[in-house]
Length: 47
Image (cartoon, rainbow, N blue to C red; front, side, top):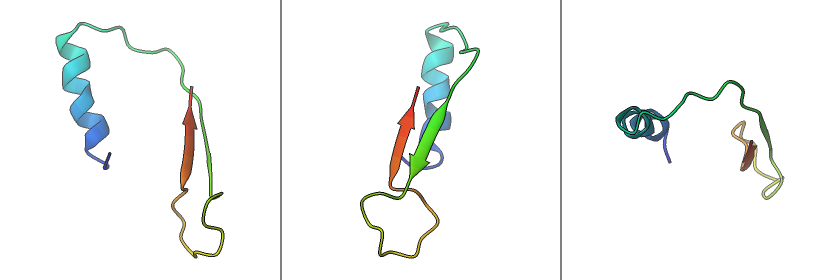
């Protein structure tokens, strides 16, 4: 999912009259490819 993918899901949630979450939590890190010099995490856990 790219940067815009998350925002496109908003339309589906609006169409279903889904309630908006009150809190979210995320944890990420670089665990799979430690030898790459990139800032983007390769693992994301979202609650």
